[in-house]
Image 1: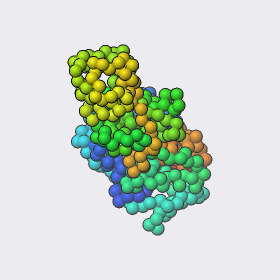
Image 2 (image 1 turned 180 degrees about the horizontal axis):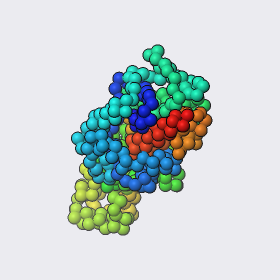
Image 3 (image 1 turned 180 degrees about the vertical axis):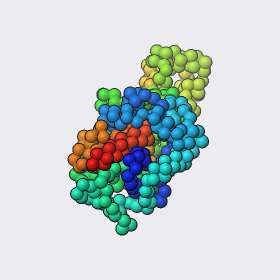
Image 4 (image 1 turned 120 degrees about the horizontal axis):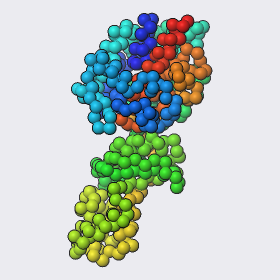
Length: 399
């Protein structure tokens, strides 16, 4: 939508081929229906939150910053608000207002939207492309922007169509993989299902090398873990062999081992005549206590006043490194975004134009770019869409 709007500022005809019967179906469900559309930070800080190919996005994010995105929406009548962590939402908390803003902008720019119009083939022709759609609609275009997303939430129409179109034209596709998605683990965590943990850290290691360590909130599911820091971790580990990865939850990251030992000693003094299984209520959520007891290998019926220092150190180890073994990431149907896509080495970062095919441009998730949660992925789509549309407009005008 942003690419079409920007390209249409040349006052030449722009056709937007929409696979669905309405615009923005995936946008409609983002942010649990609230649509976290960007993050109000500098381009430099923004790029620190990009996981795949941040350097490639330098030009796009600087050409169309988060602040310019906010101005675009405000100027088109969509009032915004900024929440914790710089997350920007429509004031109404309704993603439909974001979509209506785009619809208004497209209508004012006289973009020709073709609904129920899935592109089935894209063929090079002299000075442009022949676009064939599955409703027997076909047309010629001087320039083409492929901006049809990845494979996440396929029910919204994101089924990887852009990959096959790009591949037919000679582009390399980095294998798509689920990103920002729950992680399934080997251990039986069903007894912890629904348990939410705040102010914990989650570390991922590839062998002995730490590849990620994030602080925040997470929760247990019936077969694994989810929540903000888990989703972000999934996008980092999805490019590694999962059988080499170990996850460690620090349940008490604010306390080093000595401070935690002091805390445990105070609790044990308070509950001196109680059994171990009844002495951890001040330290842990109730549903987590049996699992921690089991992992610490201390007899649950043992009186805490006779627990040894060695046993306390074992308990501390469990609390500081609650180990989990990832066996798989959840499916594309649960992934917020897609990792992988069109190889960015084959795209000019200053224009979003293909280095292989003149007049062919890319924008958004169809490329091998993805970021953490917090409005970053939608901003990537908007910035790259703007740059692709502007570059296509300039190329057309120069010809």
